[in-house]
Structures are given as structure tokens and as C-alpha cells.
Length: 275
Image 1 (tube, rainbow, N blue to C red):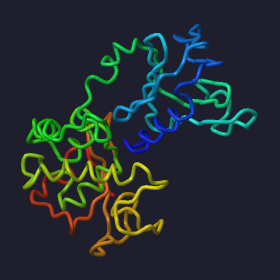
Image 2: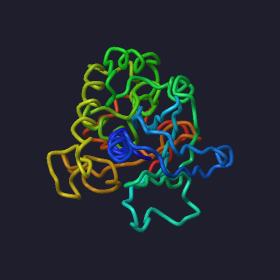
Image 3: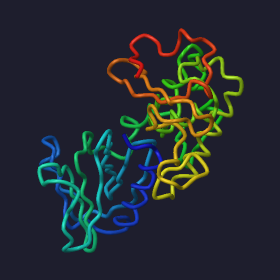
């Protein structure tokens, strides 16, 4: 699933391609929007809200999309071959005189009144890359359930909007905290919020994600994707386990030496499958 920095970049690219231009093509290929035609309307802006994309068009309408695991928006010049996937995976086409934005495999696509965008994104916590970032509110939300495991709390978009599984794992490592540590036991919880903001800001303009100090492909991330390989800090084998409710499980990567288990019975907890 894309992280908040990926969605931020997607919004910027879509905005640069479409904003201020009149739609000459509109094709929304989901049943409930099959008869909607946005041609003739001007695209006002494209913004991100956590992991959500909002394309606002003239007339007080917003096209809301979410990529989830493998959705994508691609931008093409006139006559350029579409390469984002087979035609049956196309869910949205928004075209202007000089650019065409194509949405592939979009599991969420809906048209809202711009005034009603809160129906789609009102539940989200402070956006780590948004103009209204509020660290105090983010901290309050993160700590409102003190017994919740840190990894689960970080992934909950109602706390901080924009953290995905990669940043969850990397944040826990940089904090030297077990992903199963109850958030109420963090010694400096405000550092968690500040570090999350710092990581996403540092990566939002990069072509690839880096949480270490190395640009080498195999050393850009501390623990994520390194199951069974040596920890880049201490050499201990990185471990994995599923974390979260069954319907929302994510594979968590952590170093058992750098992220000591103060309460070993919490890691991995019920429903986890160590690897």
C-alpha cells in the first residue's frame, strides 16, 4: 500500500498536469459513475489527504480516489501509449488538451460535493504532509488508547494520516521500540510524532525512499523487507510477524536486539505468526 509521501507526489503530479485546464475527456469506469460526464469543467486542484486523493473540479465537485494496495494514476502526453496495465484495469480517465490522467485498479472511486469531502476524509487524523499539520493533536490521538501496540497505533489513519507499513516498521526501529510496545509506555511519545513528520518530509521529493544514511538499494531501509538478513545496525537477524486485527494484518519487521522486548509476552502477540 502506498505511503503518504507517495500519495503526496501523485497529487502534485496530477495537479501539475490538470489544474487550471478544461477537461476534454471524462470516463469513469465504475457502475455508479458510468453516466457521469465531467467534460467542459475546469480542474481546480488536486490535493492529497493522508493516503486519499481529491481532484476538485469546477461546479463544486470532487473526485475521491484511494489506491490501497496496487492502484495507480499515470499521466500521458497526447499519442503516448498507455502502459499502466491492461484496458480492463482502467477505472478513470481525465483528459485535457495536452495531458491524460489514467487511474488503474482504483478500489475507491467516488464523486462527492466538495463541501461533503469530510464524508471520505473527515475521520483522518492530522496529515503529516498537509498544510494543517497539528503535532499536538496527532500526539493526543496516538496516546488516546495507551494499551494499544505502537505498530497498530501508527498504522491507524485516525491518529496520523500518511503512515503505511514501511514507515511503521522504520519508525519503531529508529525509536528502538518494539512494534508491540503499548504506546502509553513510550518514554518520549512526542519524538514519535516529530520523527514521523521528519521522515515523510525528507522523502516526499525523492524518487526512492530512504530512512538510513545510505543511497545503496540494499541499505536504504533499516529493517523493512530485510527478513532473516542482518540488522544494519547490530547484525542480528531481522524478524517478522503479522500484526493487527485479522482483517488488517500487516507483516512487521523488527530487530530483536535493537528493539528490546520489555514485555516478551507481547511480541508477537495473539494472532501473530513469527517467521
